[in-house]
Image (cartoon, rainbow, N blue to C red; front, side, top):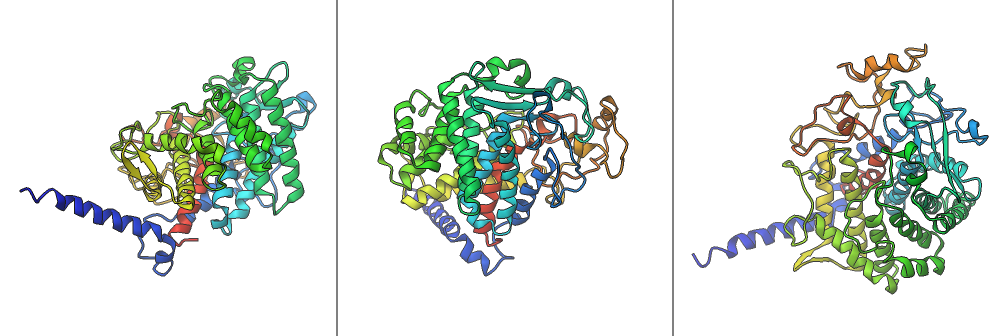
Length: 506
């Protein structure tokens, strides 16, 4: 009996060695045998669809290249009440409001996806850039006037009291702004992050546009830093409870500075981070990354400067990033994450999939930095290597795409079974092509309450996802589980590009 314990340990060791070897050389081994690899999912197909989704969220005058053809022009007078051009941009989710805060975060995450994994995207790189540019063109309009940012178009309460196509909307297109007397450091610094990160995306392909984005980012960040305050203080009735800044604005200032440091290489921003990092919450243990809280993203991004660029003064951010990683890994002394019985990371019941996609992206990105620098993560005596992070991320993405107890893909249009009744006005109402007559505000509620599948397939849309017990009712009225959002898809783009490349699909 004394000899029995080492055998399971040996088995575990051999199994882990096999897994790490298989994942260390995924692309090479699978390109030769594309139909015999361990990838259950078609990541390439999912990648293409995850980007196509953004065309379904477009506001403004649609281009001739528009592929989501059941959509039409909308919001063509946006901004006119304030004598400013705010046509364009994205609707955030299943409604017809343009919320600047989540739109800017979506832009930053699309850009980060391209910065880290764009070289793997092949034909989808151009589509990704077009998705980014649709947002940045709008953000340039929203920041055209110094010390002013137009942060929302549409009265959210009145919009939500209607169920109508964006092409028909007749609810008030009120414009909301922040300025020096009514600040919003959170939305301003996130907008700066979006512009700065996008400037890196276009640096080689369109240098003049890149320069325009970067100069605007510098100006907007200066405004965010000099006029401090949360935007939901002054705009509470307009932005709450939809996109209240619950985490404050300190995380966005650190995040914005991190992106400007990366985009400009100006020592001013490195100095800003060194001086202000702690007061802006660099080492707080808030391990939720999404449209509201950017602390974890800033830690991972700044750890790259240390791990890859060898910026020694940012050494602490490796530790801050490691703390986040350790909080996710089951079995470590610092594990805090909750998972469903089927293995899905579960943060909260409302739009949980946004945390799945953002966390998966961070895991793959941090694994890339660790691999480059030959480093690992130490979680209280448990050593976690980059392949472990990739395994966790792959498991989350696979669950999202259908490897789950419901055998349901949570990406619309992907796989054999996916949500049919998503909480999305344009998708759930007949298209203008099939029903040219206007559908008034309250008439659309018949579609909201109908058990019929949506007539328009919003290809690539990732919904809020299952509950804590892996259940998904597929009900249109259940916005917590059935509503898609741009900020769910944006980080998934990078994760899918990595997985598609790794398994020889791209």
